[in-house]
Image 1 (cartoon, rainbow, N blue to C red):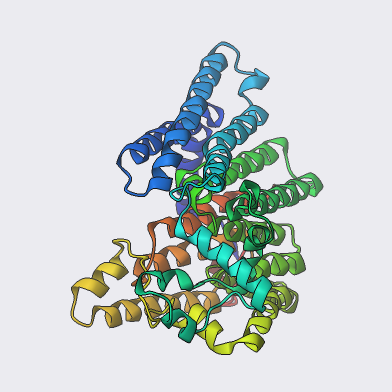
Image 2 (tube, rainbow, N blue to C red; image 1 turned 60 degrees about the vertical axis):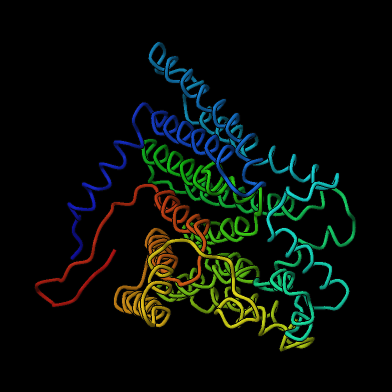
Length: 449
């Protein structure tokens, strides 16, 4: 039989109490105020010049958002039903915050870079644009190992393209025309905004068609959706990444879109969305695998897999046919630490600390990573996710474990689990009741929600 989970209810109640305080404005205030502090500290202390430039602009944007929310809170005390303090107004502040903390510094740095500044973009921007040029000229975005070895030692790292072939598409505009709006970050932002807009539309359409939903359930769903969008846009780890580098954000947004389609019971579209993400970067592949398992519980595994697996394979085939060694060197050897140079992606997470501090530490870290993968695989086999919410939670916690245990990783990769876990509440169908599976005492069977 199916029963309510008191523990899940308590944890959900605590989160809702915090999230709903002052109609959601209290947490908005905390988000923007802490973000303003982070941006200001980044502007003063960061050793990366693009990050310092972002912080100088974003701190002002976050401060404006903070002051706006303070004004909303004061107005709410005088007029609790004012439209200026409701959910649409909070959406407007979020859009303003994204424009001032992400899009404005992004455009500013792109214009400065087009004017000759060489300290207005992180290396991944140059890598993606070089990949676009190679794709246009040679039919593959990758340099072979011999070509990389022939580069001066200081330039060999920049010769690698550790992404899937689809990422080179964002570099094509710069290959065709050298101006500020062909900066790959501009197109990362366009792709991110488009995917998130489609995700919001899909979830709102699901809410509108759920006839059993009460007004309160619909409002909670919309409030959770706003919080999920904030996590993928104005959260500093996302805003900073998009403004200075940006290649992770369209991948993340497409994964969120895939989960939104799953919540809308559109398995084919979910597979296409996560397949597009997988054609850009390997980080989407674990999400694709979990979504395929979700599809199998709905007898739609093939429909999910066609897009989730088919699109990345279709993107790899041309590069494989043009230069197999180049593809292998960039996509496999380099990320696994067997390239001609070592990846600079090193953040003090447990996997990196174990790999660098203990004898045979890299093997130990790899073993822990494999063990975490096996544990997730067992979880998927024994209790496959039957809802989009469960799928998002497994993906979020799984990626969090992987990032913590990988010997080579970046702090910025945390944007994936943070956004996925925050996105999960928005995937609830209005009117659903949280339940858990327990054994039926009479039959010995187990039924899950």
